[in-house]
Structure formats: structure tokens, C-alpha cells
Length: 490
Figure: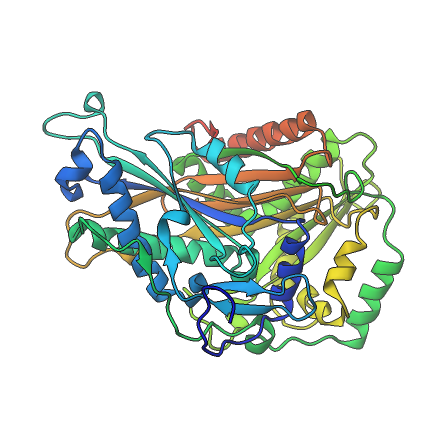
């Protein structure tokens, strides 16, 4: 057996998992991450957490939370063997050394700086010996000046969960954060001063692979359309610099947040026009990217879609990769109302895109994920990508609303809150020029994070894209009466 391996049967990686394993093995992609900032009310703070030096208390709290998390999710107790082969396998780990998996930042450290660092750090399992995830913890203890005797300031705790894409999609990260929230509330009510730092993973079966859980199929027409698009790509689509690869791949990030009031106003505007936030972002980003990119005749926006609703035997909190994606094209030469660029954002166009996305996510036929099984050797397929043109201008992955209210303790007067979630991913060597990740905390902020590979687009252009996107969304929210300013940074 391999080092730190348990001799217990475990299913083989599925088609998407093998693709993600190969991609990370080659150094094309590092990880995906979901970060949440929790607000702990004074009534739930132990004496140790109130101390001037609360580092030991924060560590103990974190280990207590992670032990509960690991017991629930068998995917957190595996690694991968043979990542560079055609038949990689999962390795069930015997134990997990928590201190090696957690980064504890100094109090009030810049979350943004840590996001940049962690998205630039591979999570590859170290040859099958370590787990495929990492955690960031940034405490922000209450400052006396921010509270009073009658109303003391709360304790803010930011917890980031970063993981190999093969063990989870974006919604998996959101589910893990809701589990962290629940475990955090339990640990605060019954704190341990000496929790174990080495834990045994769950030996439960992994959730089923995508193709086992979802009835994928490819029709003759769908195959021919995909083949035609592959052989004869549209040359008018702008997609940044050609695919390039040299180690290390550098991930660049920009982000902004809309306030809770602005987020609610934006959702209300979308509902009024029978649209959705994802569709609105698709149209606005297409216009902004085209407007900031000299000579862009066409834009291909790719939207990630969850197919969990079709997955048999997969629970809402299970980790796994149950996703697909679809493209929406926008051209300056298109007829009005059919994806035409250059005439501003119109709600009829947003509604049209929403209908396309709903239709695309409404069936398991001809999903791009199904075509992965037609690739005879994924590693060689990916190795041949450098030098080719990128297929997409941008991609959007929207977690939607992350609801932490399900973790409330019945009858409890005090609860841990969360009003900010940041979703993001590392640069993707073979991916779109721009990658937008969006998440909204229920009743809280909407955060947009942009990531890209250094050299694929100019930093000043990326800055201009985010500035204009923030300006447009803020202005649209104000039409519904929201006036709270958006915030930049982490």
C-alpha cells in the first residue's frame, strides 16, 4: 500500500474527476475556493476567545469544527494516486494531520492577500499522501472602541475552504461552508480546550460519480453540432492570448462586493423583468468586455450549470462534481434582440439569455461533460492544448444564494451570522480569458471575483472591466432605491 493509505475499497474516479485530476497534475489549474466571514455574537465567546492573545483558542475551535466536517464528508479523507496516468485512483487516507492543512493568519490580516497566495498554490495531494483541500483562518477579534458595555462588538472569523476541483464543484464548497457554520455554532456552545489535531477520516462510500448519478446521453444532432464547432470555430470570437503554459502559472485576481441592500435591489430588478442575476451578468459582462477590448467582433460567454437536480443518490450537502456548462454568443453583427453587441444592456436580451440558460440546464442530453468520455487520453489531450486558441471569452460560475439559516440551533437566542461569501478559482491554462465567480450570502453581500492567468489579458484592461462592471451593477441597483456603496477588496 501507499504511505498513509487504508486498505478499503473505493470507487474509481469518474469522467469529470479524471479530467480535473489530469489538469491539476499538469499544473494547468490549482484549486477552487469558497470563503465565508462569520460573525460570532459576544454571548457565544469563551473567555479564551476574549483574551488579548486568542490564537490558541482560535486553533482549538478550528480543529473542533474540522473534526466534525471530516466525519461528515468522506471526500475530505482521500487523495489521488497515478494522477498522470489514464487510470488514476483515489487513495483513502489513514489519518489527517490538521495543522498541516490549515493556515492561521494573524488577526485582521488581509484576506485578499491570502486569496492570491492560496489560489497560486497547488492542491494536488503530494503523490497521494495528503488530503486534497486546505483551510484558511483569519480572526478579527472585537476592538473595545467598536463596542460599548451594553453592546459589545462581535468577533469576526473568516474561514476559507480551498480544494481540488476533482472532489467538488462550486456548490460543494458552498455546502461545506454551511456545514462549517453548523459545526462552528456547536463548537462555540461546547468548546474543547484540547481537541485532537490528528483525525481519522470517514470510511463511508464516496458520493457517486457524475456519470453514475446523472443519465448523460449524446444525440446524433448534438454530436454533429459539437464536431462542427470544434472543426470550424468562429474566428470572430475574441478569447484573449493563445493558450500558453510555463511554470509557475500565475493567477491574478480582482474583486468587489455589492452591499446587502444593493444585492436585494438587483435581484428585485431581475424579477421585475423576468430575468435572473446570472443572465444579467452574462449580458453586462459581454458588453463590458467587448467595450474594453479593441477590435472584438464577438464574445463567447460560458455559464457553468449545476445538474444536481438530476443526480440520483446525491444529497444537497454531498461533495462531488455534478456540473456542465453552455455558451451564449454575442456579435456586433447579430440582429437586435439576438445577442447583438454594442448597443448597451437591454432587459429583453437578458430575458432571452435567461431562457437559453434554463433550457440548457433542463436536460441531461448533449451536456459538454458527456463528451469527455470520447477523449481517449485526457493527459495527452491537455498536453496538446498550448499554442491553440482559447475557446471562450469569459466564463461565469454563480453559486447563487448561500443560505446559512439552516444551521440555526432550535430555540437559541444567539446565533453565528454570515453576510459575506467569496467564491473563486485559480487561473485555468486552457480556460476562458476571464473567469468570473459570484456568490451571495442570504441577506448579505453579493461578491464578484475575477481571476485570470497572467499574460492572457492585460492587467489594466481587467481592472477597467471590473470597474465598469461594478459601476453598471451599482447604477442598476440604485434604480430600485439601493444607495449603499459597493466595496472593493477582500
